[in-house]
Length: 205
Image 1: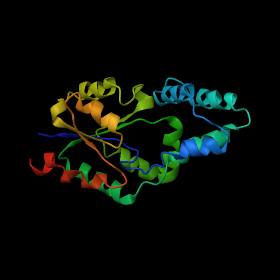
Image 2: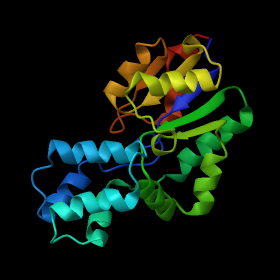
Image 3: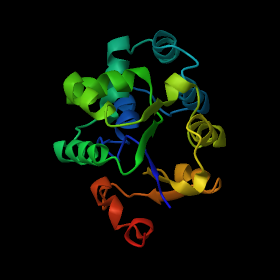
């Protein structure tokens, strides 16, 4: 029986333009995105380097790009947070039928942009809906590494079989499923988190 729902953030609640970072950096003359650049971004998502070091890693490689230009390009992925999704999670939280956990791969700059886009008031409304709110750069773990799911299970004394995980990235849901967590790899182009209870695990319970 499902008693805990674990939600991703981007392209589950807040809309993203995932190709925007590469497109924006390309327009600034960054081409191609190299393996070492991707590694640096992953280190930043794990909170293993701070914002200044992250920005400097890119601007040192491309001296013609200012820190402000890079930050704008980096944050171009973050779009709007529809109010109806905020109302959905608030209602779900109020009903108290499930333990609610957020588990997001993110970083300081993106969270700052999220707050700017949706307002601090709406962000705090959203955050208050969850029993636990895990951001990768704060816990130094990142999806799809098995350790991040094990961390959530252990920290909250959860059984994998009692958890349902929603994420738009297939490798993330596959990794969780390997631990026995029920998953939904939602397609943001065709599906919406507010329809989560159409899943057979809920309709048949």
